[in-house]
Every structure is written in structure tokens, then in C-alpha cells.
Amino acid sequence: MKKIIAAAFCVLLSASAAVSAAEELLCGDVNGDRIVDGRDASAVLSEYALQSSDNPPAFTYEQMKAADVNSDGVMDGRDATIILTYYARTSSGLKTSFEKYLDSLNKDIVDSMTLHDKICQMFIVRPEELTGGTDMTSAAKATHDSLEEYPVGGLIYFSNNMESRAQVTEMIAATRKYAEELDCVPLFFSVDEEGGRVARCAEKLGTTVFDPMYYYKTKGAEAAQSNARTIAEDIVQFGFDLDFAPVADTWSNPVNTVIGARAYSDDYAETAKLVEAAVKGFREGGVHCTLKHFPDHGDTIADSHAGFALSERSLDQLRSNEYLAFESGIRAGADFVMVGHITVPAIDDRPASMSSKVINEELRGRLGYEGVVITDALGMGAIANAYRSSVCAVMAVEAGNDMLLSPENLGEAVKGIETAVANGMISEKRIDESVRRILRAKGLLE
Image (cartoon, rainbow, N blue to C red; front, side):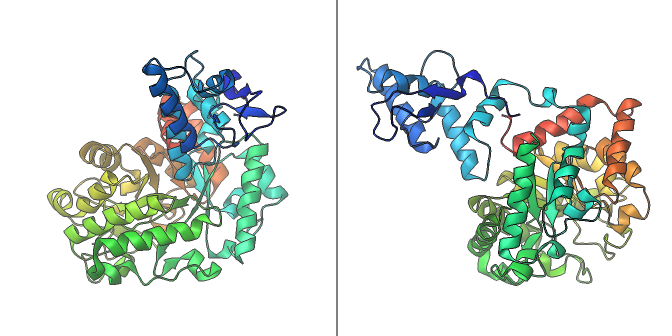
């Protein structure tokens, strides 16, 4: 991951006022300000248009070399497209340097990863789940050593991991630095920040306090989008880049308490409209967002945190009603869909998170979703009461999940999947499919 391809640096003995003769210019940095962004792409497009009209070049020879980011010997619109794509992704939270981004376009990162590293990439866990109980509010030696052993795809932080703004910012920054030093794939840094009663940063770090989203439904899509954008902007400042929000469930059962006012509405069509707006807001605020809890947790009576949760909705009812918010959120560009531990007998007798029928036939097949599918936390009662970590991890991958959230025992879960691959229960190609989706979400693959 740390190798820099030959085209990554271009020497400029430049007439550009922004760069001295002694400095090097990164490829893509045609204006010499040491940043690869939209201004460079605009300059490349202008130069390409100029030369396409048979006019003499405005770029120096050194700028021409810097603009040839795909190293094909010519400077043209394809180079500008690469720069623009990189700029768009950095604007949406991508932290990878342009050199590493170019590197990812010129080699298959997945093929260079070990099976163990690929499997670890499929997990998002709490800091203390990674370290075995230490480094709950800081990132020290245990975090470094644990990342070396288990280079996970991301971390999720809860209230018990938060003491102050400076502490959280430093903890995330230190963890990111360790990952870079260890040559790990960049991590997701995630949090449950929905607003209302599920708002870790508002509770512990003093960010914007919101009522439960249900109480804004009369204010319409503009409020849903604005609220989500504010939440995103609030959490980005600490280093978070993934939010497990918005709730796409509809509060269709008045006695449901696990979702309740966390939902945007008790009306299916209204939920769809508001969730779509919220996804746009999260993206504007610069974080990846997550639709949850497919195929919908709003009609259940039981709480899947504690144990078995049943939805008696028919398949026709789900497709005509509950799916509407997930469909609109997917259209708006949601990066993740979280599958709940809800059992829907009309689809499968297994919990949705363990069901290929739910994930592959309904979510991917019926709704056409191509992004990252993640389980709800595997340590919740609906799963942990019935399955060991190794067993539920294998079942989750077999069902079609790309990422697994917070198993009770990370080491056991990773080993379970490794054993399943060794025994032929799961193919390495199946693992690769998920890892490629994850790396695309991280902006490391096209």
C-alpha cells in the first residue's frame, strides 16, 4: 500500500510562482500549490481544449508531465477525469493521498492482500473489542499491536469511548497514524449519531442536540436534509467518516419501542421522502451514511438487542411499504445498508442478517443495491444468544454481508471465516467480492 508508482512524482524546474526550482511537484499538481484538487483538473481541461484547437500550449514541459497522471504519454481529458474523481472523493471524506489513489488505479489491491488481511477488512469493531478490553479512551500500544494482528476495516465508538473533544480527536488521529505506519488499508471511523436518544457525540462531546427525528416530520425534507448535514459536519471535526444513520425504518407499530421516534415517520411514503433527504444531507456534510435496519424493524414488538425479534409482514406488504425508504435512500446514494436481526417468516426462518434470501434476493436483487451491506452488531441478543462468534460470522458471510459489526469475540470470528475458506465452505472469491466493495467505499478502487 505504501509503494509509489513511477508516475506518482514528477520533477518540476518550474516557472510557476508557487513552486521553487528546488521543490518537486506531485503528479496532478499542475498549478504548484502542493494540493491536487479541482483547480488542477480545470487547468488540465483548459489546456486540453486549447491544444485540441491547434493552439500553442500554455503549459510548460514540466506541467505537461505533471498533468499526465495516467502515464500514457499524453495529457488529455482522461487525466482530468482522474483528478476530478479524486477531488470529488476527498470532498466526501477520502483521506488517501493522490499518490496512493493513483497506486490503487494501477494495481489490484485485493490481490496483494493476504487472506487474513482481507477477512479482517470485513470487520468493524469497538476499540476495546480490538484490543481485548484496553485502550477504551485512548490509542496506545495495545491499539497499535492489535491493529498489526487484526487490521480491521474500521472502528465504532460509543459513549464509553468518549471523554472530551480533544480526547476523541487525538484517539482517532493516533489510530489513523498507527494504521498508516503498519501499512493497513485506511480504516472507517464510525459512530451511531442519529439525533434524539441515539447520539453519542451530542451526549458526550457537546455537539448539536436534536430531538428524535420523528418530531421533525412536519417540517419536511428540507429539515431532514439540514439536520443530517449538521450531524455530519459535527462529527467530521473529530475524525469520524461513517455514521450508522439514518434510520430507514417506519414506525408502523405504535407499541414498537426499539425504533419508535427514532424513525422519521409513521407513514411509509413520508419516511421515504425524508430518508432520501437525510442521505443527501449526510453526504453534503462529508460522511458515509447507513440505511438501517433492512428489511425494517419498525413493525416488531421485541427488541433485537435483547433477543428474538419477529416481523409478521408479508412479502407483498414489505415490497409495497417498508422497502420504500430503503429504495429512496439507495437512489440518493447511501453508502451502506445495515441488515437487522429481524426474523421475517414470509422471507426466511433465519434472522435477516443471516439470510441470503433477504440480502441477495431482496436487497441486492429486488432493490438493486450494489454498495456495502453490513450486519447489525453481532453481539446483540438476537444473534449472540443463539450462535458462537465463529458460527454467526460464517453464516453472515454466507448470507452475503460485506462487513460484520462487533462480534462478541473478534479473534474467534476471524478464525471461523478462515477455517470456512480452508474447508471450502466459503470461497476466497466470495471474500474478494466483499473486500472490493469495501475498498470502493473507501475510494481505493474504481
